[in-house]
Image (cartoon, rainbow, N blue to C red; front, side, top):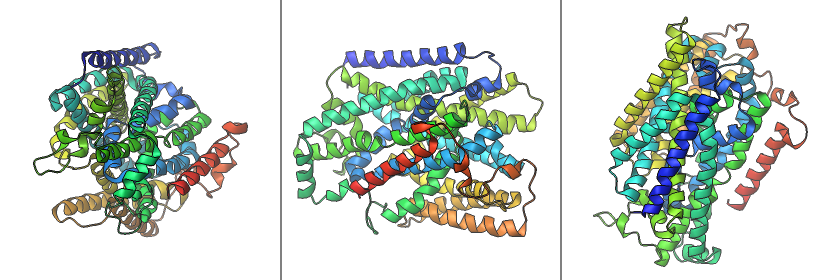
Length: 540
């Protein structure tokens, strides 16, 4: 349990964010019924806000909780999911952003219709809504509920419902502008809280030498390595990282509405590209401020400086899902605990608000307007608000099922590995191969999604020892072969619009000049690649 002072700080922070959300959403909008203002912030977002909003939507309370758990259990290994994201954000900036911005689409299913056909749009819209509910909202609720129950002693479902109400209120009323403005603030708070607990853990451990000593004595030096050999007992060998992550990463960062919607609201192409790359640089941090604290907690536990008996189950094993909560209560002094709780709430609220806004946009544009093309902007906004409210209710209903995963981080990646392959396939081939046909993409989405669901269910009934990332890679390769073969069976018939939505060559995106000097997207991309190469070399 935490002190009254910290509770007051936490409540005050929630009130501040809710007030800011309402102010940003209502004061910045010229027309309360304008769909473009509500869903895409009037396409006025600049690169710093885009970059921070991308990061805040990605990093939720789930990441704070699950990455700390991963740091405790397996060391820095899970950091691959953070650092590999930088490479996919470069792909987003270089190859996908130009088509998204120039075509003026409001949603990614809309883009898929312009490149392929309407059936592809409908399917992606449904899958995107389902994935947003499960991955971005339900899993985040679960992580937040576990933490708040541990810290405040409030029933998990009660705390989740309260957060759902306050976050849903300003998101549903204020639209994307409210989401992005609050996410910018929440990013700062989240990072501040993460840095505080990292510094305090480091100080308590006593520096790098004690860390190395504990890991050497326990023959656990591999906890400092990002690249593990084949047969890794943690299920994440190096080849799975480089083969499987791009499959889920391209879907998540380049083809998932919840994430890419921040880019779609950009003022122009340069702001969109730079915002994505800015987020890539920020993604370096989670390994050091989200995962490292979990590893330091492991060292403190081995040193006898961190009592984890509260996490011990009846069978004697540690229930490490709650490691972040224990670190907050045992390592952080009164007053700062409130800041840490605010950081957790920031991650939870930003993830949920971003997902709700994308669900509202998808349902309004890709499902409602699809069947009622004469719908007014006022009707679209109303439909989006109703959809967001229903999504909140549905996500809460899924919590008991998702809570069965021992590791939240493994759970979310397991789900994504079965959803992403067909979507990544049709986007990649659509952008880079002019012969990719509409019927081939349509059948690939249908068959690939059905195959992914079948493999997921079979794996739960008859478990096999295949890393989830390799499952994603195998499914992706099947989808690629399927789409290529079907594209020859059903040859492409381009429309005037689809002819402009693929690159003639991989170098074509680099011919756009961009901003001059260091702000140029080519310079930033090269710098980000260099940074990631150095980091992987240091932690290989």
